[in-house]
Image (spheres, rainbow, N blue to C red):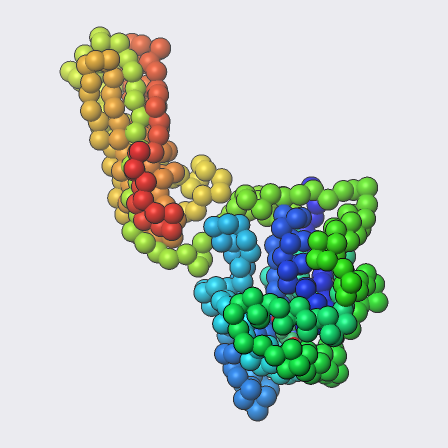
Length: 388
Ligand code: DC
């Protein structure tokens, strides 16, 4: 299995970095980090006045922003700031100018660079920006520096703005690109420049798909014979490098959640008759099975490897005795006010209760059948309600 690795993509504004980095990350099944979005978010939040703040105050304010990466329901990687997804508001020309402005401030840069390194620790990542290869991830497994003629970049941006229905004037877009270039390339701290070991690609005369192919081939070449194993982006319990990981539910909302599960224990009519009359040799089967089920709900997190410990509010098992066919129908119900659901608790509860019935009656019948274990209801949480 590959150890976590980082791939960096640096380059000037409008070169196609974001699209390429996102597509390369999806192709490799690893996370994607848009560091420009972090500068844009801080640019908008702090404004141009950030430049007038005393250094310590600026550092303190920057450190207060918490950036995290999460997957949305389509498995795309989304940057969060303080528990909320960073949205389209950062994509305006104004946000770009503010980002470039605040990106000159050494205290702000060093705080963001530390945050970027934290985001890149322990997971595989395509990180995109201006100083990814030179400063933030100097040991990246593969570094790219993308460039294109300013007129070509301005043309791409111009078309993007038109497609979004925004009013745009080519000369203004070109002037913005040239001034952003100047600001990014000539600033004193971490100016935009290729790392000495970066693969340089001029995208001026290439289609996006062609550039992507160049990047993918180059990444595969970097991994050589050891190969690059693809981790499926659809699996939330696999990290980018294919290792197992527990989903971080820190940013999920606490909601009231309920789950119910059922199982059936089939037995002979004579066993059922003994159970009804509490005449089985081990005693009151259903009372013991109820306690066993409740205990199982409380201990589910010890048994299901990637489930979260939950402080459940309530657990119960109900029984229905059926004569035709002779059986006990069990239904568990578990409640929690929490960040993850209690489906697993309900399923574990009903299974352990069913196994306890078996244990209490096996002296008189060994071929009882435990069947039809299933979730019948759940409510709460992002995925909504479910009724079997
Ligand atoms: O990539 P972008 O256009 O979203 O970036 C916005 C600005 O943020 C860019 O003009 C310079 C700054 N930036 C930076 O200085 N370092 C980075 N790693 C990323 C962006």
